[in-house]
Image (tube, rainbow, N blue to C red; front, top):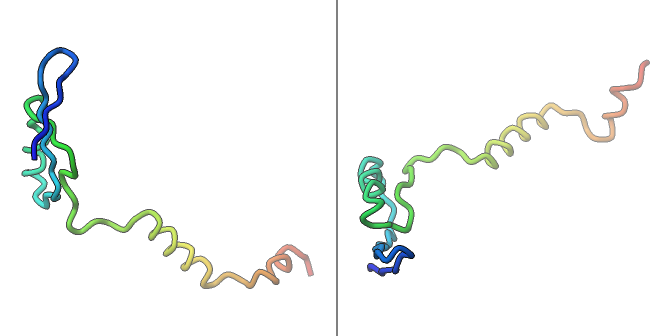
Length: 82
């Protein structure tokens, strides 16, 4: 599906919609290098094995730290000298 849009300078840019993502990184880079002749909209590349998200890393770290943490009721006891 291609649409054209009149540019301010009088030229025409062709927008080609990329509805599917490309798992081949080099093919996605070739597509991106067509900028100037065509302007593609969509996701160029999606890593098939993405690293964990920041949110997942935070949850994992919190679970690791709370495993050995004292109960909330006993936290102040850590600061009282006996």
